[in-house]
Structures are given as structure tokens and as C-alpha cells.
Length: 209
Image (tube, rainbow, N blue to C red; front, top):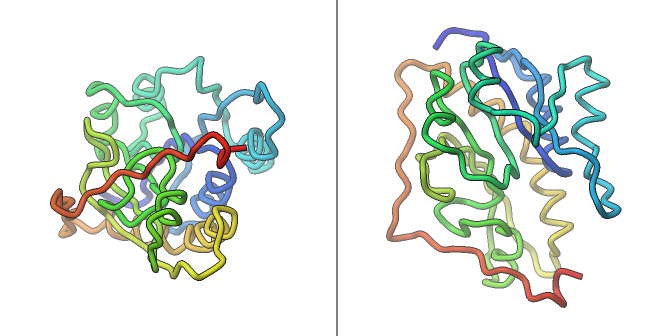
């Protein structure tokens, strides 16, 4: 794949905003636009963060519920779909819509803590390290081959909020090395080791409050 890598992003929440910043500043990448969620039904400080950041950067912004990602990828000429916290499984035709497919950023060191709340999983299982993973997407849930990972320590006293801040600090190095590898014709992503796979437990309702 030649530079610049043409990327269509679908990003959400606080880490999504930091990933957007990293994509905007990444050498060898052209960001074509961002697919965002609409206004939250309940108060949420992060609900509109990605949209506001994309608009400040002058990027095209599309509403998640109104767009077919596959069609949008073809219309924009994207080489890659780049996702974070996109809570829908992508059908095969969307995964194949861009030449490089779709890439997801997951807040764990896959194959550990697959699923929707990996930071909770790292805390509950008392991990001493976790991190971010950029992986290509397939039909499974967080099961695709790994492009790059950035690890950091889990310290005594860490919470979901402090781990999220560490994820934000890891976003830029993850993005820059992921793009470098995707542009390298000799690079091959690493299949996940299913023998090491685990799934993050869902928080109890009292933990979610």
C-alpha cells in the first residue's frame, strides 16, 4: 500500500477523540472523514467529543445511524476503515469494502479481555499490565490478527478512569506505528493465540453506576 494511507474513521468516546488527534497528526495518512454517533439520550461528556474535534479540523462528519460503512468506504475511496468502540458487528461486505479491510483499536493486550469492557476486566483479574491493541477485524469479536500493541503497567489503586488516561497516552504511538506497519509491504499481522484468549466480565450493575 502506498502513502498516504486513506482512512475513513468511526470513533467514539474519550479514547476516540484522542485517536482522532493521533490520526490527524500521523505522517503517511490522509483522514477522509469521521463517522460519529448522534447526541446521547442521557448526559455524557464524551458523546459529542469526536464530532466536535472532527468539525474543528474541517473534516466531513457522518451520522452513524444514517450511514452504511461499506458504501461510504467505497464512495470516499478509503484504503482502510479505522474503528474504536463501534458496537456493531460488521458484515462481510463491509469488512471487504476497503482494500485493507477494517481495523479496530481495543483497550487490552489481545487476546486478553475481548469484549466490551476490557478495562474492567484488567482490574477485576488484577492484571499487572494492559494496553492498546490495533487489530484487523474479522467475523469474530476482537479476534482478528494483531498489527501493533502498546503496553503499560496497571498500578495498585488504578481505576477505570486512570487506565483510560493511560490508554489516551498510548494512542499516538499506537497509531503511528500501526500506520508505518500497514504501509510496509513486507509486514504481516500476527494471528491471535486462542490458547491465551479471555473475555472481559461485564460489570455488575452497582459497578456501572
